[in-house]
Image 1: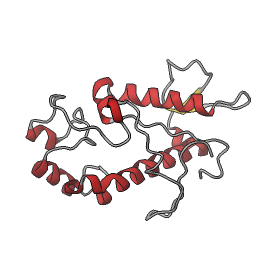
Image 2: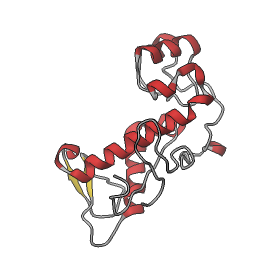
Image 3: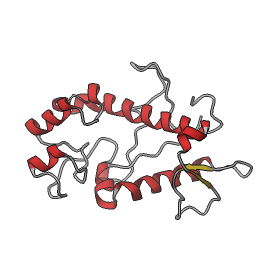
Image 4: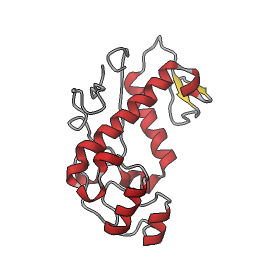
Length: 179
């Protein structure tokens, strides 16, 4: 998909940024950053479901966009593959949570690992889950070490190394930056 695209941009926000600003605000900021990175004068800009109020570039909101637009569907796949690949590559730093298998999704095994070990810097403290509530981790109190790629408490994580160009277990090639 990335090779077929005229241009691709990937933006990642740190769990710390999402906890501070909220998931929706963080997603809209990342999407705005991507929109600016790939903007072409002659292109139609489509966004899945939301208007980007902070984005001065003209764009069209498409409700249920991943079902109605091949470009939006492709962007969704690229985002998921990139996120899953990042989680698998960073998994050795946090072996207790088995991210290589669950890639951070709320599987029964992942919830059990949270119950046993608490949360790590990859977990959003603002994520509302049963496991977090049971552990009293549903507030933003407490500090963690920084995530690799987010030195200095940056809101944006540099994942280029984690998703470098190569086929891995999912046999999908990923390339960071413009295609």
